[in-house]
Amino acid sequence: MPKITYIEHNGTEHEIDVPNGLSVMEGAVRNLVPGIDADCGGACACATCHVYVDPAWADKTGSREPMEESMLDFAEDVQETSRLSCQITVTDALDGLIVRMPEHQG
Image (cartoon, rainbow, N blue to C red; front, side, top):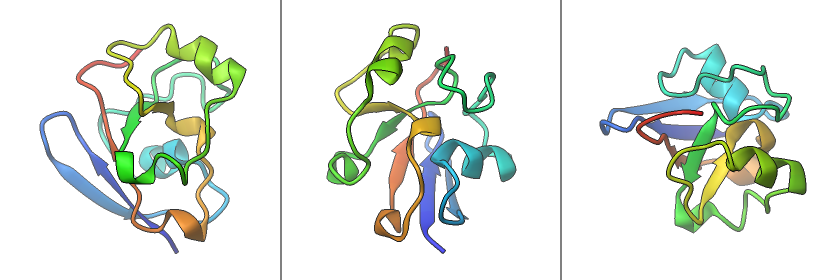
């Protein structure tokens, strides 16, 4: 099972085993990781699961789809590696993925 490291804005790390097929957001919500609100439940209809993908992992998580780009317009402090964690599906290739949460969501 892939391990994902979620890093809160304050630097607190949570290393979580996330089953393949779940989204990075679902892994956080199921394990009560603070900083990912996921108000829309993963429907790509808000920006409350905004994360910064560690640059070393940016290519492996894929690119933003147009709907994700639109939703990121509602996020604060969007950066080059900003993604909505509901749009990143966990696979074995993401074992070791590191994501950081912004100071504020949505």
